[in-house]
Image (cartoon, rainbow, N blue to C red; front, side, top):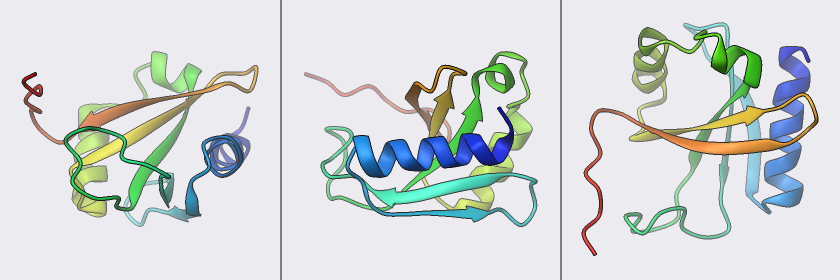
Amino acid sequence: MNNSSIVSLVKANLAQQQLWDFVEESQLNDLDAWVISGVPPHKLSNDDKDLEREWILPVDLKQYSASDLTLEIADKLFAELICRRIILGIANDDGTVVYYFMYKGLHKPKKN
């Protein structure tokens, strides 16, 4: 799967299956990477106060497991996007997409 098909797959999954609004893709200036942004239909975490635009980095499962996503790249992503978290949209070759939060710095767990 090439990078453009991964971006298209994750974007379609967000818009059609996860029912996100205002789903857009854009290319980052300093990195050779595409990100997707959008607004989810509900809060993604109990720590969220309001709905806000989220940033999703589409990643091929092969890229993810081959350590192509390094801390240096993550730091550049957070610096350019200016956000507290990035969601990894990890696409498998069978078309399934799973999502994981990647926070900037340490994130304290919520007390029950």
